Image (cartoon, rainbow, N blue to C red; front, side, top):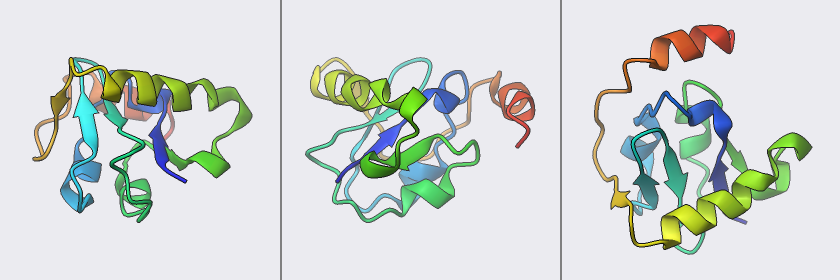
Amino acid sequence: MAYVVTENCQDCRYTDCVEVCPVDCFYGDDRMLYIHPDECIDCGACEPACPVRAIFAVDDLPEDQAKWEEINTTKSESGELENITESSDPLPTAEEKKARLGL
């Protein structure tokens, strides 16, 4: 059971999750992060680290977020994204999105 990054990460791209990941399974584009399902060791460290509650275990994905399992797989396996292994500043829109989410 891998973990999945969902739509709450879009336009935020906080990297708190990357800092606690022991296997560097995060990949990113200019809008968000994704978890590579074959590299994730299911430790769960990333889930509570996410300040916008964007990460879920596959088995715990809300029904309306189920599409993100395939999106994470497709994006992270594409070979087109950078492997994100170090923390960086969130996007300029992150705090506004976090406020909109009520977090």
